Length: 78
Image (cartoon, rainbow, N blue to C red):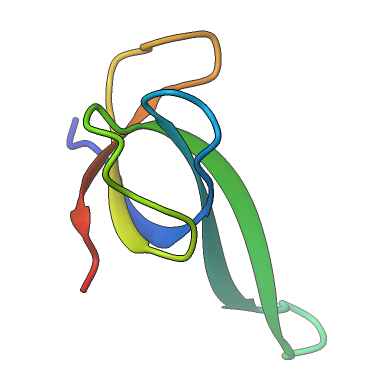
């Protein structure tokens, strides 16, 4: 099965080798036909601590690294 790749914005970098990435998705409400934005936060592994708050990044699924980390940062999204 292919690994999912998402793009989002780094919202937290306080922890060592970990960043919090907020991913927004847009979809149309099935009844109201209004465009809705939903966001979800993912904890991702950043081995070199190179990403800071506000950076656009792409994250990919991986094997569990810790209790909450199941994603790793690929590269800058730009």
